[in-house]
Image (cartoon, rainbow, N blue to C red; front, top):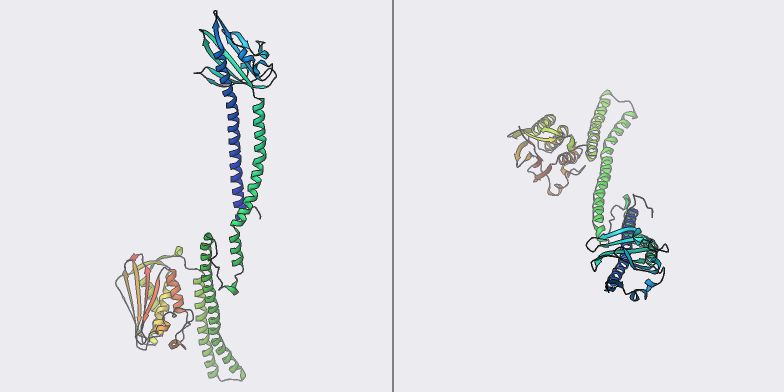
Length: 469
């Protein structure tokens, strides 16, 4: 496993390692400080107890204050430099002291003051003993028999500091070992936790354009991976649909272009077999020219679809467009074709509706729909176009008096290169309605069709409108 910011395993392991290491260090430090505090508190408590004992041994006899030393010298305090010391002073004079403190010049309070309890009149020092050992000294000031008194009780900290040192060494040993153990456990936990992701990656890595129909099995995946697998399968569905559409487009385009190319090739072959009359050459050239026009229309329509598929229409580039104006331009573009078939195109609208869009693309969409209504209409028929507004929607209806659409063809008329049996042999490319639908949907609109065979067809287009003028 590589540990770098781009690796999920590396990030998880690093965060787990840093968090647990910091936690162990903080806990270890806290425990160490608490143990140190407890040890020092224990020594301090012992010294407080000794002070109370010494105060209890003070008594007055024949006007003289005395201390029953037998109670004291029987213990560690009677051994010189034992690490246990006391000194009792009455009215600035030494009443009694440990053997090691008979030299009154030795000052137990010469060390660093740690605390002072004003109410109890007690001071705690960390000082150095007669042998240079570290001491904790408690100084207590009080009055006895109306005379000022002071008691010093001290105890060596060597054993306590040794205990604290041993505990510190223990922590310095156990914490790194614990961090190492956490690192190993963390590595295994992260590896185990991310193993489903590795399996998922391996599964999707096997899917190619040849096996696009395969899907990731969601049933046995971890709960957190099911959403990802579902999203990936949905993406595969969309990609498979897109690839199928692309394959159909290529196949259909090849088929559609094959016929006009064959016509052009046949005309050229015939003309080249022998000399022809001017009339024959002229007729052949007319055929080639018409066939070239058909190929040009087909290629232009395919380019339009390719541009629409690439997302050339973006809302960021839309401007305020008059729907009525686009339809009027579309009618002008189809007028010559409609006049050839003696088809009347009429337009009915109440107000000029404005929407955000691309004027050229919308004109092309309306042209394709109106041209389709003219192409598959009967001679001397009609095309009626109505524009209205309802609930913030612009509604455009294009109705013709043509041959209508069969029920089985209704769901396919917007497919690329699809033409119903009744439309076979017409001059259309089979892409007009596909282009119109793509443009309409790019503008946030919808297109639907209603028809019955022999009763014409009605196309309904709806757009979110900006207003009217």
